Amino acid sequence: MELAIFVLLAGTALGSAILVVFHRNPVSSTMSLVVTLVATAGLFLMLGSPFLAALQILLYTGAILVLFLFVIMLLNVRRERTIHSRAPGLTWGAAICSAIFAGATMRLFWAAYATAPTPPLDAEAFSLRAVARELFSTYLLPFEIIGLLLLVAVVAASWIAKRPGPGEPGEVP
Amino acid sequence: MTPSVLATAALMGVWLFTLINVTPIMLWLERRAPAFMQDRLGPNRLGPLGLFQAIADVLKFIFKEDVNPAGADRTLFLLAPTIGFVASLLTYLVIPFGPVVEIGGHSFPLVVIDSDNGMLMFLALASLSVYGLVLAGYSSNNKWSLMGGIRASAQMISYELALALSVLAALIPAGSLNLTRVVEHQVGHTLLGAIPAWGVFVQPLGFLVFLVAAFAETNRLPFDLPEAESELVAGYHTEYGGLRMALFYMGEYQSMAILSALASTLYFGGWTIPFVDITSVGAWIAGLPGVGDLIGTGLATALVGFTVLMVKTYAFLFFFIWVRWTFPRFRYDQLMRLGWKVLLPLALVNFIAIAALAVAGKV
Image 1: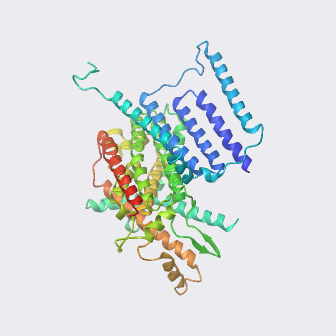
Image 2: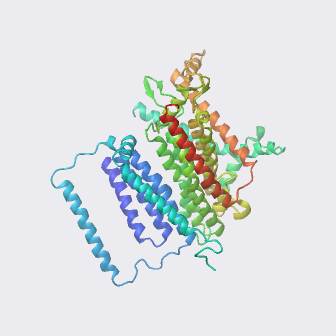
Image 3: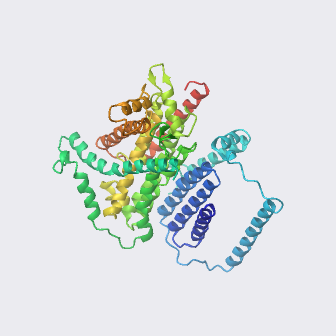
């Protein structure tokens, strides 16, 4: 039963991830990404962490991908005419990148499973309380730095988006 | 089938029946109530008080033609109403309507998912319902629909922030994301020894922000810009008819009902009555002559809790209708200004104040 659910969720995640890349319509690609992320949230649930699953759906599917859709619809991106771009070096570049990624993944699994199987993680370590305590004690400084970084990005973005008033530098005639 | 599986199935059945029936009740209420507000009669011919008008409305939805517009993205067009409907339907899973009751020698919590991540799950599932509107707008191949979809995505993301922040502040006194704990905390304490410690008395500002954001999240007037009929024909559902259109209506009424139930739970003590223990009310009902043979104390308590929560929920639903027929629609820039420059700072102020009070041990 558990294996069947895992295969279903993992298969859905992989299948829709492939669709994200190969679908010609950008909105359909985004929706495939939504399916991938929801399936991954299901995998988190199976691993005994409803907290991570809820965060995954709330942040990625509920907010970030809606913004993707917003931008795609606002720019009115047309569907692509061909799946593959004809740029000559692209195939080779993709092959090399895939090889490097596959190698790195294999190395990671090798390191994790070659010597001894990793013991299953304690679900309690990924509960809301445990994550919050770690985030606000051990990782407080990185957490604050990331917050500051995001603030800087927001300020910069709103400065760029601001239309300069008459007489100000950067005014578009 | 173990008793707990049966109990969960029964709870889900009760909730589904309640939520599906919100739509016909609201269809009737939304015709009759504004009629009396405007000194008219409203539909009063079909059945007592015009109650069967809802049945006529449903029949009309079923028999209308199901149109597929030319050039529409067919898959997404058919999928969109279902996504919005299902996402708004699932959020009931974490809302409790009673204490732990004992039925037939087993104890059951009267909530489907009794989880410490309950509120997060609610927000996660609720955040998915925007896809129904956005995809409907995109896939219809209609500029009015597209405008409505774009408005819906921007509006719902903007107001989700204020909503989530006010909800978080409401959870601070109980110190838990489990809504059962939140309700128990509101009953277990009093303010100044006389007022029940309902969220609305502890944080009136947070409640105000929640209420306004809830109107925006459900696209109700004065925030119904995604379907503003004077500018966009019908907005995101311009091209829909028949039952698919009905699914959008049902999704909207369900989200209103569930947000109302959530508001009752977070700010008005949920299934509890101030200063009355509903378990003793349940015991009193079960002790009435002739009743005790039919239902035990546990089932009677569950019924009382459910009734109390529904009374509070329908009070909010009436408020939704009342506001709809009172305020005019916002302009789009006013909507964004209200969301980002008024509600969000107010929610933050409320959050910091409640957090400070909690640290000081006052709430």
